[in-house]
Image (tube, rainbow, N blue to C red; front, side, top):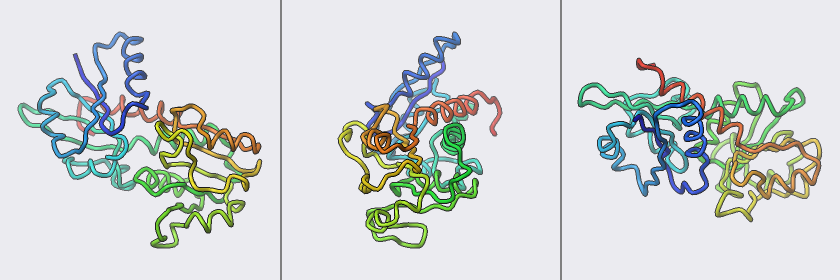
Length: 252
């Protein structure tokens, strides 16, 4: 039986195992998808050696950037985004090669275009400066949308904006993307530090969180008349691209 997995911490919120197990059952595929909650990545290769049927794995918070130093290679998209959420295990005899990919870019870009009319979107703000924000920033750049990344830290360059400055100019951004864990279990009662009183019906709000289905941020945004979406469609799209990568026989 082939094995796949999700690596990260915490993983109690994840829908990936349920999604892939249902997929395998529906298609009659003899495979399983496991959750591997690891305190660090320092023993990731030893884990893979102990799992001879492991064909590939997804990577989630907080390891999408840290995983890079344990890989033998990455594809061009992962290089440009600076982080990886999908790893292919390439076995040749007793040797193991790990190749990293970024399928979040495809998942986010496609979900964004499916959900929102972007013709009126000139500027976007990404809430949170973690590893996934770099993928979102690259996607927006590809689409020709100007953006800022909101951070709690002192902004290091013009790419970043403090939440204090953002809250005084929130109306300048038509698209708001939450890439922070605020709203995700066990932080369901939290929202990113933006002034929700300044949300307007012209705002489009994309929360990358998919569990819970409707975060507190999305609840408030809907009350303000904003168009909203969560991260579930992005999850499905990136998962399906991961599956395609794992099914390719030769290295790509």
